[in-house]
Length: 139
Image (cartoon, rainbow, N blue to C red; front, side):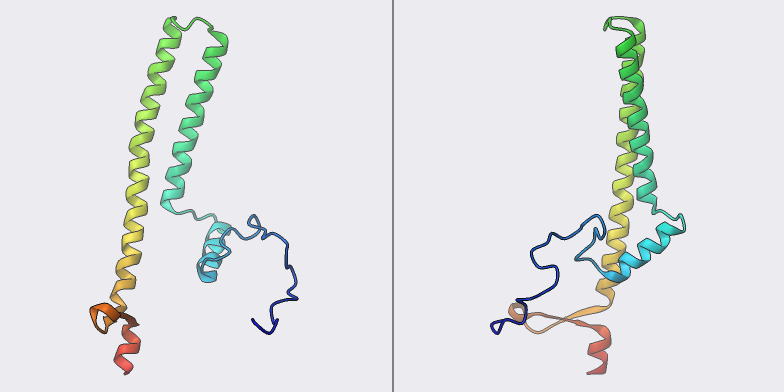
């Protein structure tokens, strides 16, 4: 770099197009696999649950807005019923979000377990080195 090898790069000074590639620094294999699955219509469970929460939330807000616009009297029974329905939707959405969180955490812990099975730590506590089990068995 001191000799100027990176001075004349194409695209220098232009912003990265994150819309085209949202995972610029991610693993290209994961990106390609996710792209293939999305093209085939497959969505992970947490994405489907998140879509369900968002749709419930939007429907409840739209109903509340329409009733508020029609019924300007906030003390009417229609408004009270709409508020109760909205509260039920919020409570069910919160429980669904808790389920989404559990699904995400379970998948992350599974990925961690799979990764941790394939590595070993070598060296002293002050100078640990991470080594894959394939590397340690070949040494």
